[in-house]
Length: 558
Image (cartoon, rainbow, N blue to C red; front, side):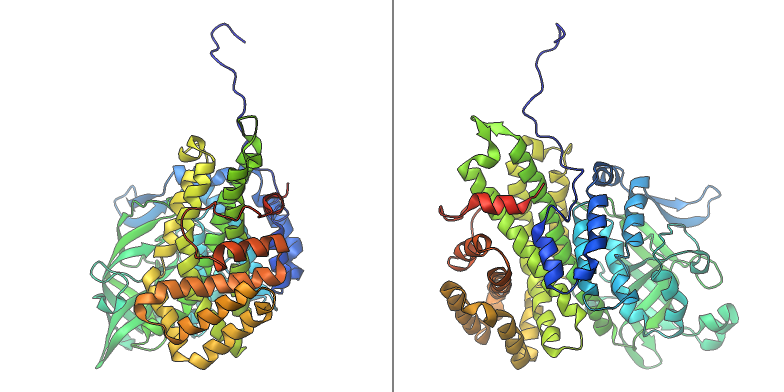
């Protein structure tokens, strides 16, 4: 050592990276095959290897440390409302779009396509989460736009392109397009019926005179959006009160950044949101100063149109949360294996093993649930699968997203002060967790949606849950008793108890999946800690006879 060196650096775990994110996660590969997408394992393996490289994982740090910047005017003083991103953001977006995370099931709707796409999305969720937002919204827009006639014919070829094109240009001059959404306003928030933004139909002759046939069906929109996601997108789907010669009501409109004549639409970005997390992604406040939009769906049917897209964005909230959980677990467990205290590695100490194994169970259960939910969307024509999707989508979004922040805090604590500082990924991951619980319907909204799903078609709901849970009932008496109690909870469901009901629905489905498909040491530990007793308190409360070594060995295979 040099005479002025004060100490030698040792006992610091190396950073996590240069690992195949699929191969190190047996539970994910098993779920992909089980839920009908074994044909995609080759491409997912290649994706897992690419995303696990150090230089790719580091893109998240760069994109979040160099946040987007609003450019209101060009150098000549013309209003442009552009968003400037760091190159790391564009690299992440290019990988996601190139992998078809925004469109693969629509281009190739073979059995298992939604499961394969969910698995890819979960892998991307272990890298960076802000870039997932515009990808999700673009993915969710496709079914509605396929029914939008000429509008869909014009836009879908660019939306379904696997080429990322961030340039601010009319869609005809681009290689690919992204779609954003804008629903909420200052006075309403979740209550979109309180929206005051108004849309007035433009006389067809006036629209044709300016834009030709592409102008037909245009509406003039005046108002604002308090949260306008990804303002750099090529178009947005928004909600506005329609006023059409006696017909009125909240309606859905497609609002492009550029109009058919190449001019910029009158969408004024007021500012970008200064958010807790999801900082790589731009979220904005906007005003519509007579912007033009085109109706999607019928006048007054905006909420049903948006709800169809909402089921897909909520699916991604579930899958994305499972991805963040997996990332936090990998970093924490990798650290614990490489950090020594009191004579042995943290991962070999019984109490730390309990914490890590509990996190591993939560992550595996989240992954299994997410891919099972994705399979529901692969079979829209199956009434049982459709009914199950109506139940599990809101319940899963509620429970998994609620578990996220506590999961992130525990994983951060495993790493101690090294987890709390911005030099590593845990602080960023912790800040990412809450957005999935808030976005696309808060926890209470999800629980109310669950009650509606159970009450609107009760026989179909009971049949769907029974078909999912019954095959596991004979495998464990504690699970069978839990299912019987859940049936009573559903029969006597009330709004004040909806959160607990949603929790129990998800835990029952997770328990059934693990009992049927996971190794016994995983399934039995899950049942003992989540079903035989109430979930509560901190992680690290598994029974002393849990096979900690086996659970941790399965959790991260490197």
